[in-house]
Amino acid sequence: MTENPPSSRAYWYPEDETRALRVGVLEALRMYRAAETAMRRRTQQSMAMGENELLVLRFITRASGRGEQVTPIDLARYLGLSTASITALVDRLERSDHVRRQPHPTDRRKVIITTTSQTEDEIRATLGQMHARMHDATAAVTADDAKVIIGFLERMRAAVDEVDAHAPGVSRRKNARRPADT
Image 1 (spheres, helix red, strand yellow):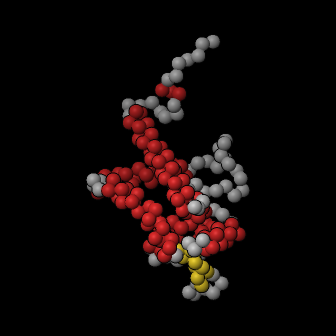
Image 2: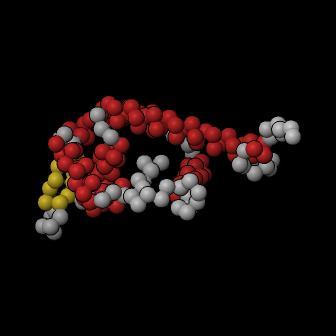
Image 3: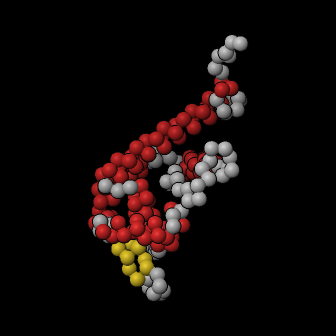
């Protein structure tokens, strides 16, 4: 039996007249995600933190920017971790002077987690130039283009969020971790 040469059918995308364009878009998205993953690793090294610590700081910073308060329960839900794991994570961030626990203003059983000014300065120093370059990269995007791009990215997010938990090869661990803000 002779082996068939590789064909375009070997790839899992359907054959149609726009296949090359679609594959090109997906490849560009993969390249972006790879660059972003590498940037996250460099940021983790620069700030001497793990991924979850950075995700917590980012979550708190964004919530604070919206005027929202963050509790340990919010962090546990966001990261898909137990409250005990969140307590240990917040303890580490508090020891390194990145976050503070403060009493909840209306419920004395709860605490609010906030970043410190040191953390905000460190984030700006570490990520400020990158964020400026990313903002510059969007400067030529028109309102109509933005709607198309946002729609595309929302559909891609939905596509990857819909991975069948019962499909072969998908982790069935009880506490499988949530992917990082992809």
